[in-house]
Length: 239
Image (cartoon, rainbow, N blue to C red; front, side, top):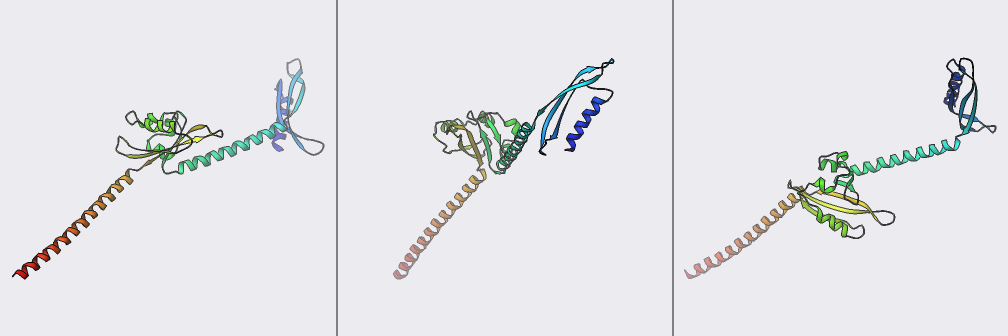
């Protein structure tokens, strides 16, 4: 290729110029007799100099790099695919509206989505490697949940609702992550802020209670009206 030819020309200009190097290295392609191209690396060393100490003769050796180059290309493609898959996973992770954390077996934070960073008002960099209990604060214990998850078998989801110190209602759901061998590798923790839902639920319960009271009051009024009509009828007969 043109790039390889230019590298070779550059090396030739150096060893033929006034400031000749004592050694050189050049990666380039060569064409074999069957028309195929192979990558080689050529290394040269000075073996004779003139009276001024400038190299006038070189000896060189070339090594075939074709397989190494091919493996490097395969590795680069795999890294590109892995990077693309990681970006897709991260995009999916961040698209989840609820706060989500990925924890190790010691409940230290490894990953957090955008919603979690927003919930705890912290960046992923600041949250990473931090124990979940530290993130919650010393006055908001989650020991009950961590103990229940540790004692549970398999990958069952454990759920607990807590009220934070700020008065928010959170539902915590934890699912163990199992590896290929069936052993736990970490946990996925989803935090759902149910404060607004709880408020709506209480309002709905209050409305249902008021409707029930109204129905009871209406029934009593109806019964009293019937009793009064009977009493008035009896009075009219007496008269």
